[in-house]
Amino acid sequence: MAIGKGKYDDLLTEAREKAKASGAVLIILDGEHGMGFSVQAPALMLARLPAMLRYTADMLDDDIPADLKEIARRVQAGDTSMFKVAQNSPH
Image (cartoon, rainbow, N blue to C red; front, side, top):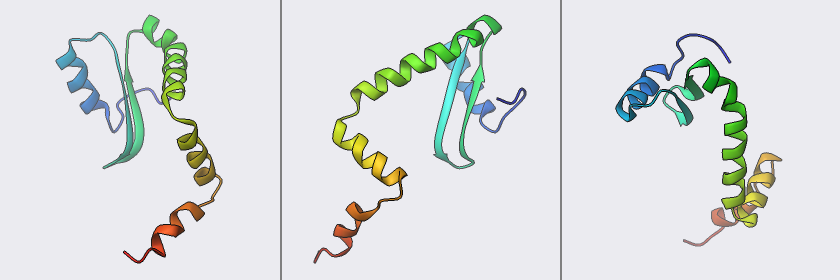
């Protein structure tokens, strides 16, 4: 993680200030400037952040249906066959 101002830092500052939060994390997926993240947190909170993110990831993982996980796994492995059916559709 780079220290200093990042490409999404201004957006995170705005969100953190509006929430009146002492710390915040912003994750951007396929944004205008690509993918990235920004963190603003006091040192003690920053030290706890990896565990907090692992917990959040586990909660998200539990909420994702198994069939969607399988599709994501196949796409990540390069298998796009499930998308070719739509191309051959008469509609």
